[in-house]
Length: 316
Ligand SMILES: [Zn+2]
Ligand SMILES: [Zn+2]
Image: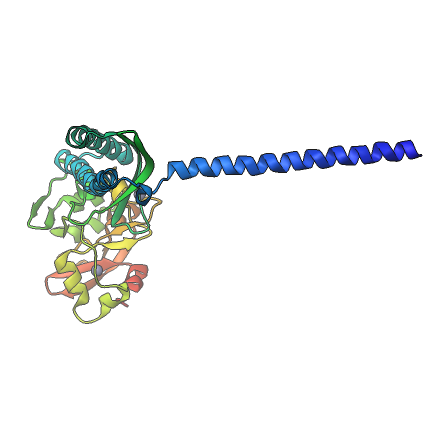
């Protein structure tokens, strides 16, 4: 009996020791992983050498403008060719990598610093007007090292909307004067090609804004107050929309996408004979295709609007 008890307590000691070992191992593993993470996301503020810190800060600031240039270059390519890019994130990543590589060489010459950079992502944010990038950089100067993921954000305001270019191509020509795209009969033909033959008649002489501008009339239900909707259409503002496509997907020629995106009204000319056509937000014209009733904004401007968009913009 005594012997059995002894074996039992020995077993307990063994289990206890093993448990302590396992717990210590887990604590050690957590410590190693978190310290690795800390090295990976080193803060610029933590750099003690002022000169080194200044160079990294300068580099960090430049990411924003290089990202903007990379998006603009890609957008310009789409607008000129009227052809979408296959993978906009990848295209912009490559552009940005090229620009950063040349900046790395410039920094080496100017400051004697060695920087390796790699663009990890280009993505939309919770504002469809802002695109962000994450860039891994490893820098070294006179034995001092810095390694981190730097984030840059830029606005797409002022860039051309690539969607009409990718949807109409050169086969459905349109031109633009100032900041407006004039479709002529292109949207009528586009809608006919996509199954809305009669609806298309309402879009003869339609127009939409050329460049992205964020609508200041927020909350959007205020569009129903006085001349707000007319001001919005005259200035060519874009709106946030869960249905419309984001800027990155617009570069790929997509009228809708799973990301939080943008929508803009395609304005038509009054015509008393046509009271119903495809609803005016661009994602409805270029993808979703459902009808809306004529809404006279001004003697020279009208919109076809479905009830949910009327509600969204306070136009009931
Ligand atoms: Zn607006
Ligand atoms: Zn998207």
